[in-house]
Image (cartoon, rainbow over all chains, first blue to last red; front, top):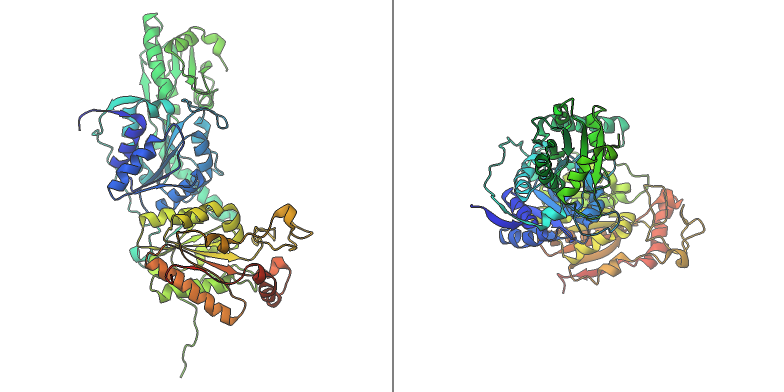
Length: 356
Length: 248
């Protein structure tokens, strides 16, 4: 397949089909509607399952049911909708079932707005659901990267028996770019789904149960230790990031997704002004690329965290930096997207932006 | 010569039931298990356990099972049934789970005509959490959160699920039964079996509402609880077939 021009949400939907999705369950919300719209046509046409649920709460629990049945299943939503899904996400993570959740962030809090935002970093990486659980969170910066991540996401979810979240913002969802769907995904030897609750007829002699209830605290603690061991494996194996212009940076920007793209332009502009600025671009938000911060030169003057929020990833930057460099913050929020010039000014006035 | 006259259904595991003495859950579990065995669908059945006293039903039914968040059983059942149309999928839910927190999931599953079976246990109280008022609690019924008795101005009237669901096009079979004496137990068995038979034949959404008991939280002996189910609950929740597409 040659490169095609596609809208972000539709490209994500097509990539899900190429990734082998069996079923989609979701509820309408802007700015992600093109994902269910595209899938409603193309999944049904191919004998797969598409169902518009009565609510986000119901959609994520349909995902739970189908994931338990051993199928490749996904949902998509946006900020307030993802908030409603948190209960189900916690159960799915607890029951160690694979699924993919696409989150197309819009401005908040509350009903907020429908313009692009990154104010759901906490929601994705800390979760609004109860208990000690983690999602594997990808934050692509382009439609091409969203497609590549999306195609791979079902393999990763199956491999670790864990929900994967593909986190983009309304800008990536709504814009058009040319994409190639043929980049190969990483080969993984996937374990058989011998745990699937698909009837004893499919696994004679054994009852399979998808469950998250452990009333005995000793057993629940053991279950949590097991989950934690898995998250540690994920940290070891799946951390992804990109270093941009990292030869000898005077300052380092940390940004992901749409904000990273704006920062790329700012870095080029700053170069013309004789200021070398590097960038750490996390591609996974969990696991967070803490080790990338070891590569920041000792003499760098500071780290500027740039987000479309009031400073959420900033927490992880402060943890990863561990007091080594000054850390500053630049953010726009509520759906406002900055021009590269604003990032240029923020670097030039870095000392006024230091938070720690 | 010794002859086996009665044994536990193969549709139940050997796990000891967690229900209180005199609770009717045990009877209904047995009826569901027998229906699955007699219709030869146990090996392709998936039980969806809910939150409430029956939360551990995933340990009791001798088939695959999923444990749902509170109220979401019909959403799990829908998700699973859509990808596994040849399996037999049923939920087992109490009145708090189905008629209160999960009413949206249940109504919409029924309205889509999901080919699943819902076993709805109505005992007019929250049992697991210690006897709070349920949406089906009777007017005047004293619970830990309606200590002077349920009253209409404050709490509304007991919600009549079968009457409400009878208006839904996608429902193929709907019957309210009770288990307070052997005759009614036998009829409940017939109803449950019919619901699963309809699912086997892909006829649509089936639900059996069981007027049940909660001796501990009602503050009664098991015998008195069975009597109260008949004398006080049945007038509010009359028994009978509310919908049968097969008979139409």
